[in-house]
Length: 255
Image 1 (tube, one colour):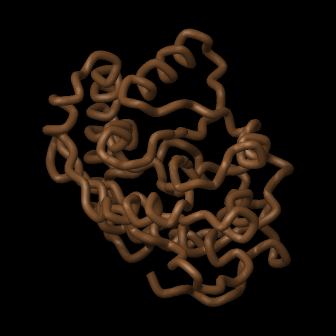
Image 2: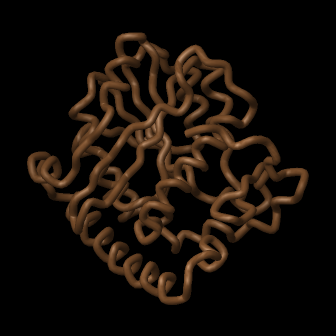
């Protein structure tokens, strides 16, 4: 946190840390609750904004990729599958080592219409799946690549940060639409999700523009509520792999 917010005082950082641990505790309880919560109860806890983006994609017969980060509570996004015109909803995930918790997560995320798709099978799936506007894919895209696989990095929260880039090839290849899900905690147990279009339709985009814009958007969200991001997921554990050659030195894009 000191590296991310050098402008903040020690008391400010202590407050963020304290509130993070409270939010993390809330997240654990809320995640357990998703195993049994009804759709009516979950709907009372989450509000949505700019869902018309998905209607446009459906009408134009273009599938959608949602990019978001580990801001609390990303597990509450699953109900959106019941509110949009698309028939197929896929959550991209990495299989957990624990067979018990892996099964629980699959069941929890599948209760309201999401299907789980392992990250290793994503490219094969896109080759086989029609781009007909009837599918939505959700990516939690702020993890750190495995050690030895960090090929690209950005300045993120004042630090050299390795980032995933695989999704950067998809819009040109498959003519997909991309949006960012900004998750804001309104108060304890209640959240607001706003969908922000990342690459406007028919606009040309530069190499890595999508990656840079996503990281700018998640950083902006974190700065709004720094206590609401998963600081414990070791975002910079492989930051030493980002050399000057791997670090993005281009422009920032308007968001």
